[in-house]
Image 1 (cartoon, rainbow, N blue to C red):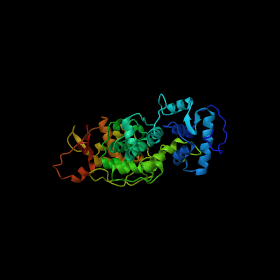
Image 2 (cartoon, helix red, strand yellow; image 1 turned 60 degrees about the vertical axis):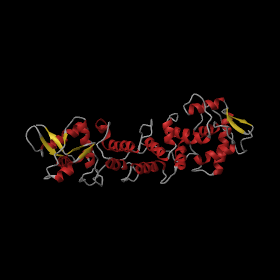
Image 3 (spheres, one colour; image 1 turned 180 degrees about the vertical axis):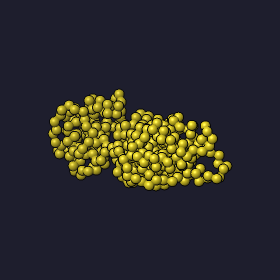
Image 4 (tube, rainbow, N blue to C red; image 1 turned 120 degrees about the horizontal axis):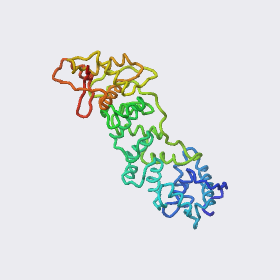
Length: 379
């Protein structure tokens, strides 16, 4: 074992598959030309030395290499370490391939190991392209952290919309999935406000890119990072204790969303103050029934075509159903979902009549090229 230092300590070999650090070392040795002990310590050091000293890392590396060689996974060939047949099989299985591929260390580390940490299929060129950019990797970290699909890197706007839905689902549970699964009535600003509630310190950010960067910083516990630092933070989730610092983990559940401090749509919205209540979120059917009951008390027009301003319905709902714990943006989004689910009907207004302009503005729900102002009441 000329490639190992005398600091290596004998470990029992029990036939179990290699653990996190074992796999990292095997993945490094699998690269073109194999690796020397010094290269392994140098190349994997930034990943594993977050909480241990350099001297401790050298001892751990020697101990792990000794174990891998005793197990027949690694062989020493003229002071360079290379994989044995069993080692090649382990690496192939680790990356989900039929056989171990010989890559450069830069590609192995920056693409294939990062993809492994995030559960991404690195065989797809589009995903490899995303992982090679700071914005793409940041997006993938956020997608992974919030349990979103990892089949592709979402664009900033699509990721913001998906995160807004995550925030609403935390508020409503599964009750919004039917109404919002194929799109949302939220504007870009409203989506960012809702997605901003997922931050460790909830706040509104001016662009989708800054929102994603802030969420990524939360997940890797680094307020500022470049591409290299972000890769290291992701890779640290692959190593087991004692050499692995903080792992990237899904966020802990947060309490339901309450009132948001700023206007969310292009028209002014009056918001309710935050109230600490144990919200009992309604299902779509219960919500729709409550809205129609409230609309009947303020509806205007002739029989069969009566309508109630959404702002008046909101005033009635927050008074009659405080147990729902809704903010105005949540109410309006749930209202749009109920309309798309066919449980009630919303209608637009003729804005030529300026008599009730304040109620028009406060009632407005913008969805694509349509603006809704009324809830229809059919008696």
